[in-house]
Length: 83
Image (cartoon, rainbow, N blue to C red):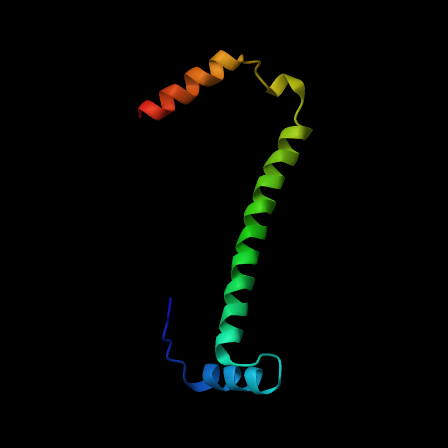
């Protein structure tokens, strides 16, 4: 994929400074790194959300849960698939 982005003003100056100071070999490398960091941050946030839900579930008392069978789970899944 090829993407063209127009950057001007303070953003352009920042990109030029960042790429000429030796942090990155060129603008493309810098943009790829920004995309990787954004992806990693989004994955970290999603992981932390799941982790918080699991911690809350593990901290709950047993009385907060309802016992279900494998057949109950299959029936629930089957109902959801039909919707």
